[in-house]
Figure (cartoon, rainbow, N blue to C red):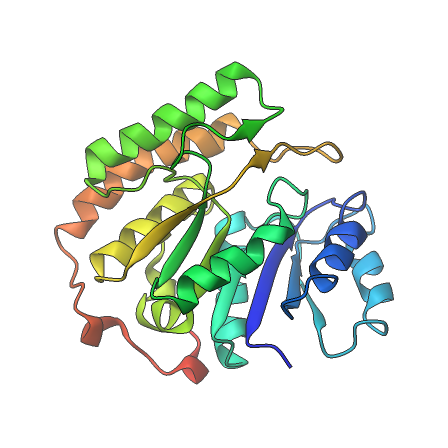
Length: 253
C-alpha cells in the first residue's frame, strides 16, 4: 500500500504515458498513480487500461468527456485522492518535463514540515532545458509579475510539479478555485499561502517534452496574466481562516 498518489492529467499522450507510468512504479518509494484522461482521441486511455492488470490496485484511471481544462482535471483528482484518504497528493505532467525521480524529494519536503512542496525551476538560478529563450523569459518574468501583484514569495509561481499534504486540499474550498490553465497553478499556491500553509520550493531541472504536443496557448497565458489581478482583488473579500475552509474528505466539493 502507498500513502502517496500521483495525479497525471492527459490529453493525447500516447507517446509518453506508458513510459511515465512504468518509471513512477520503478521508484523505490511506493506511489500510486491516477490518470485523468479528457477523452484523448489518440488512445491514451486504452494504453493506461491495458496496464491496469499489471499494476492492479496501484494504477487508476478516470475518463472525462472532452477537454475540460487542466485545473478541473486536478480538482477532480484532488477530490478522488481525499475520498481515498491519501496523505500526500502530487501533480505531475505526463511528458517527462517533470522528472519522476524528484517525486521522492517533494514527498520528503512535506514529511519534514512543508505543507506544499513545489518543484521549482527558478529557486536556484534558471534550470530549464530545451526551451527557447523567449519562453524561458516569459515564464521567469511571469513569476516576477505574480510576486509583484500578490506579494507571495514564490520564485516559480506557475510551476505544476507539486506535492500537497492532505490537510491543504481538505482546507482549500476546491469548488471556489476559478481558473483552469496556468492561472490555476498560481491560484492554488496563492490560496494555500493565504490559509497559512507552509509552501517550500525544491530545486528541480525542468526538461521540455521531446514527444507529443505542448498544450500551451495564448489564451492560457492571457488567463494567467489577467487572473493574477482578479485573484488579488477577490482575496480582499474572502475569509482565509482554517475553520472556514476545512471539510470532511468524504464530502467532496
